Length: 574
Image (tube, rainbow, N blue to C red):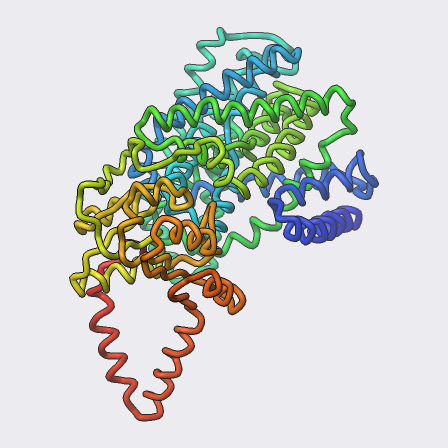
């Protein structure tokens, strides 16, 4: 027992130190945890005396992780954006799986090994893609919504993969190598059992669990225990039906995701999940053995296949569906890595329960995960520059599903043009509409364009980092050009480059840009900006007015006005 606690302590110390390094180098934390396992395992310093004990604990982390993934599946959102993402997901998953299978066969893998490689390379990392979209404020963008839709549907594909795993061994005793049933019979039985498990979980969650949760909702501790018991109950049922713990945990989470208590359960279980998930990824790193050079070469080749396959499947499919090629390129870049789910599927396949593949194949897939995660992180960092190189003329003339009302040259241009629309721009639009000022907006967010169209605002769908987009939109004819987005949220350009581009297009216009720093504002004024918005300065001045009103006893009047007017504001960015 003492050795077990010491092993856990060493795992967390190593994971913590490397997590700091990952943050400093802007790498996903998952890679830090895997690297910690590599350092502690057979390849590294062999500081963990009993890796099997750590791995057994990590299986609990796998259950917690997938339970929370299930809890976070928003079925309503899945239905709303799934329609757009379904064709892309189908082509991407099956296309990438086919290319992965062909690559595996060419590299000498046969049978189940090639199939597991195909399954692993067909899924992308939700953890990495969503985090990068969030960090770069692109979740609400057109490509952000497409990526989220594909990732949500991929989660459903992962559940289907886990459901089919029992039938992949040929229907017999994997250890003995005997076959008692035809493969297609086993597959059908597996699907029937899987459907029965899902149906039973949904029926119980709809008719029995609401009463139970309502009864225990006054006690947060008991409610958490109830949720965890539900998770372990479904996991146990999954094991009895020859499915994996991973599949049971996912189904348990999805079945109660719509409950009003789901968010509270997620908040309370997150700490436990962090503990066990860290151990899970550290134990994955311990599975890595010292790879011979040919294995490293194979991992590099498969990593290249993963990246290229995304561009070959996602980019053209997005374009065929009527969206811009730029959205296709950005979606391909964000999806260009192997998912944690791919590793989990391989890990389950190598378990004593199935014995479909060896741990060497799991090591190979983990290596591909590491390589593609690092590569995609840097690709995402420079995604808009890459998109600019691959699609140099991504303008509003390209077809787009948002059906934006694009201005044309023979239409009288609006005197005021908003270059990009984010939070400040959304509030400015409300004020401009209230003042009946004629204006137009250029932005590449599909949802912003749709909401502006509903308000009757002239919109142009396009990338503001391209001069031809701005010229097509009529920036050369506007009297006032405004960029209210700070550099932290601009992609592919910044306020200085926008200012220089706009000044070339329209030397006579009054140009208003934004800066978050004194030095930046000074540089923009030097380069010819007519006015530089500094939100921090404006907020500080406004707060001084509020402080003065507090001293004069007039704050209640301002507060009452705000409370009355805020619900009446019509904003396109919420």
